[in-house]
Image 1 (cartoon, rainbow, N blue to C red):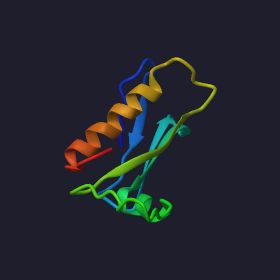
Image 2 (cartoon, one colour):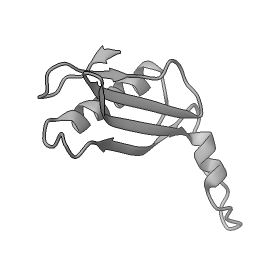
Image 3 (cartoon, rainbow, N blue to C red):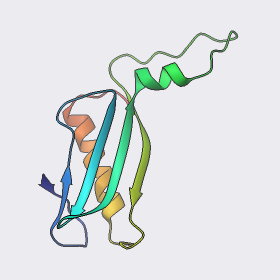
Image 4 (cartoon, helix red, strand yellow):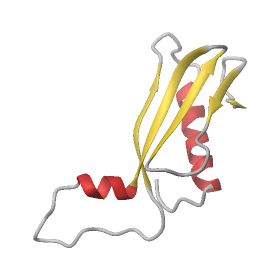
Length: 101
């Protein structure tokens, strides 16, 4: 766990340990889960895309992820938790050398 920098003190975030098809980030205030983010790998996203005969499928070199959902509990509005979580997701992707988010 690492500290999440927002307007609420003592907020921590758990990050994935390495890369997988789905990545989850969880935010806690003490023992309470207050936010999360879910990323899905680009390969998994391409499998769900409808097949079009008119155009070849798009291929991005390297590893890519799609931010599927980011959610903050309605009990914690306007504290910068979502913004700080999104920054953590971006930093993680940069550290892991993910080519696209």
